[in-house]
Length: 113
Image 1 (cartoon, helix red, strand yellow):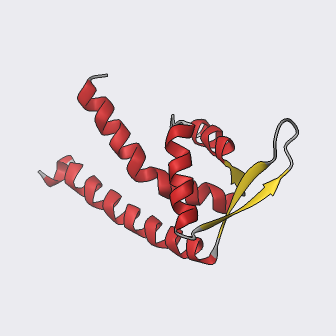
Image 2: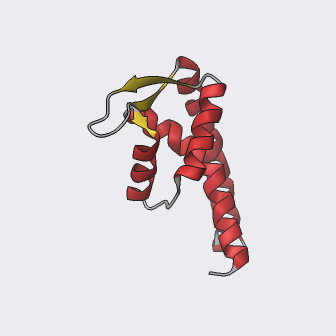
């Protein structure tokens, strides 16, 4: 993969990450590393260095709240769940992403040339 391709992949990942994190948290409250694993299972290679800043921003914007729960090993884990504002933000972000995806699909359609 070229440096340009790697940079473009990183930019797409960063653009999609807040939407994906909100969506995954809506399905099931999660802690940070668990989200990294769930994203990886979907085929998106991320790291805690990408996910935790997104979680911090979502928490600062009151889109998620945290609850501390015991861990089977080590210190308690910080679990994230959506607030009502987070649910609303997820709906808006999903709609915006779909609109963007539709535009890109139309632009890439060879029948449109």
